[in-house]
Image 1: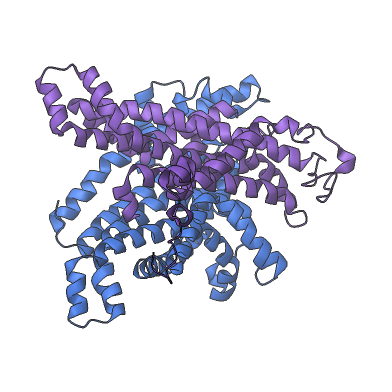
Image 2: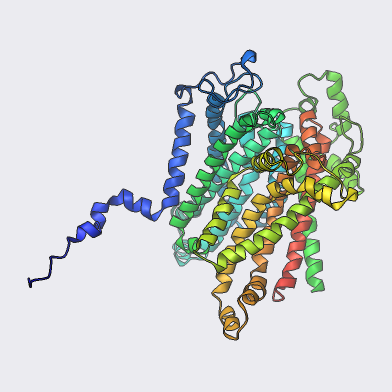
Length: 297
Length: 313
């Protein structure tokens, strides 16, 4: 080596080889939104599961002598007008929101895609089903949920059913659209030509192609369902008042919000962060699963 | 052109019929005796019978639907169980604040969100773009009433610039009207703005890469001219579509916003009706809003031909 030249620094010091950088770091680098959203959702799920062990008290225990206390070391988020600990109520509230969000995503996803698959494959049924879905989608979502809830007794189960009914048409339309375009694909035509039975075609050739967009849609439905549940509870048509849900806590804090804003504030923060996390997860999934669309949006 | 309009208008009739059928049959899809559910837990058997008779539950379904629909066509939405007033009368009393709120929100959202989306697309990849997109994600993730409380807390309670609650009719002057309505309209508009800004940006990005935009630039059209005349007009169809679809969120949001800001409009009427289980009122409001939603989307369909003369179905 001539004088005046120094050895080039070892390459791995500048740029770690893909192997050393590891799969985890690589994934974080490529899909930051999935990671941020996923971590936040995971934290909320953990909070919901371990709510009893996170220094909470009984979220429904009344203590009239200690009502409307400001947040302090004893009552982290203060107490409401009946003396209930807002911190405990907010943590337990995560259970309702996440249950509703996840259940609605599953119910609407399964029912909607079943109807969409059948409708996309049966020409005669298609027109009727899609007109019905158009009709259902012409009723503004929250109003439809309100009308459904006004007719049933308030319970978490009924909230899930009502919101699922309002979300199903969207899934149905999406799945039907994908099915219609897949039906024209050469490999599906080949399968039909070679005499494969329709259920096998659907299961082997259609369903795997639907899963990606369906998963993305389900994430957005989960986020939207959590907002709808909170909205329904907030106006008194949702989860029964006895169950602490974020919407219910805010509804109860409504009368006092000008003097004790923290009762509304804390559940609002938790709700927004959770919905934001699920939305980020959905955005990230969409970008990862459909790079063509990701470039546009 | 004329044939297209007629065809579109005729095509909405079955949708409206279907919506009416849905709204009507909701009452019978619910498990259990609808009369007993509406009457509530403290009702006596006499109350239940009275409600059953007033809803006409003792006749066959199709007869009831036909009868009800005939009344609806003639502008009769039934009578409230609670106040015994005609539902149309109650809606008419409460319609002004809601229409005011929605119009102001519409003006506000469109005049802010479209330029925001255009600028985000123009400055694609810069901090402005990222800021607009972040705002959009925030708008999607925050329920209307949370935004409402946040705005009211900052601008009404803390800074004391605007009134906390209430509504003033526009007939009492434009300024007090706007002072009362600007916070609710902003809160309600956020989701809508997020929706519109996002689709505007996406479509504009698409359009800006087209050949005719390059041609316009090459022949010396200014930046503003390219963006707002050549590009925006071609991006109009998806934007108008989302404005129409998003109208549902606006309607749903109005119901909630009115509760937050104590605006005596249709939203309050709905909420009160839920608490009293006044089903005819709920049915009437849902039907009316759905009708408005269908009409708005019909108008959107008709606007397509204005923005894109190639469209002829």
